[in-house]
Amino acid sequence: QVQLVESGGGLVQPGGSLSLSCAASGSISRISAMGWYRQAPGNQREFVAEVIGRDSTNNAEPVKGRFTISRDNAKNTVTLQMNSLKPEDTAVYYCNLLTSYPLRTYWGQGTQVTVSS
Image 1 (tube, rainbow, N blue to C red):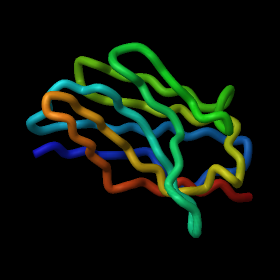
Image 2 (image 1 turned 30 degrees about the vertical axis):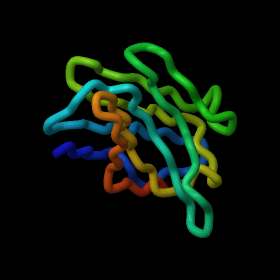
Image 3 (image 1 turned 90 degrees about the vertical axis):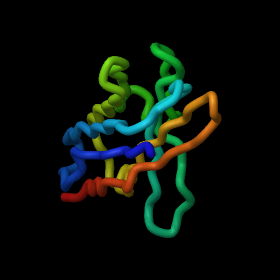
């Protein structure tokens, strides 16, 4: 039973910053990737950023240069540092965990990020 707990969401003014954290706990097999997706009202859930394996990172084009993802491998935690936030970043952000052996995908409950003046 794997659980993902997200924290750090909230209200921010345009140009501000937020840091999201996701901690994985429970019976976890090998982690292939940990990352973040987001979903705005009326939109499909979209990829934001991920850490593949231990070190490799991948960011979606709209957040490149503004968001930074990092992973604490010892604690199975990922952090998304979000800078220069824009109103279009407003969404519910979901932590995602991909494991192997067996191959499974897990989702967090989501944390709201609202960027507004």
